[in-house]
Amino acid sequence: MAPRTLYLLTFRRAPSQRAHFTIFYRYATGTSGTVIHVVGNMMTGFYLEFKRGYDPQPTTETYEIFTIGQIDSQYLNDYPGETSTKDKIPMCNTEITINRRCQEWTMDYVRRLVTVGYIDGAVATIVQSKRDPPTHRGSAPS
Image 1 (cartoon, rainbow, N blue to C red):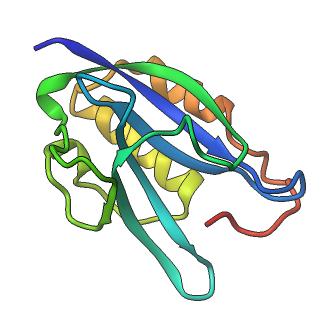
Image 2: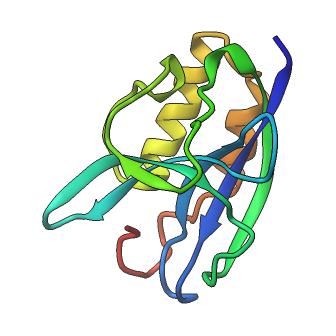
C-alpha cells in the first residue's frame, strides 16, 4: 500500500509551558486526519485520546507541524465520518499502545512503531529533537 506522511504537532500555550505533543496523519483524501495523543494532568492522570476527522488548519491554537516520516497506509484507519470525533478506542494496530505523559508517551509510541517496522528509525531522532529539555520550567502539558 502507499506510504503516508506522519507529522508531529506541537502546541504551547505559553513560553513557560512544556509543549504538548501529538502524532497526526492525514487521510488519503482531504486535509483531515487522526490525532493520536494523551491528555490529562499529573494530579488526575493521563489517558489516550484519538481525534478523528481533525483538521489542524482552522485551529485557533498556536502550533508547529513537523514532518517526521512515512508509514505504510495498511497500518492506518481513515475515519469515514464527516464531523470530527474524540474517543479512547483503538481502531487499527498503529493506535494500540501505552499511556504516559504526552512527550514521554510520544517517544515511547514512536519507538514502538520503529520496533515493529512501521516507520524508519530516523523518526525517533526527529521527535526527540523537538522535546523540551528536562530543565524547562512550566506546568505539565495536557
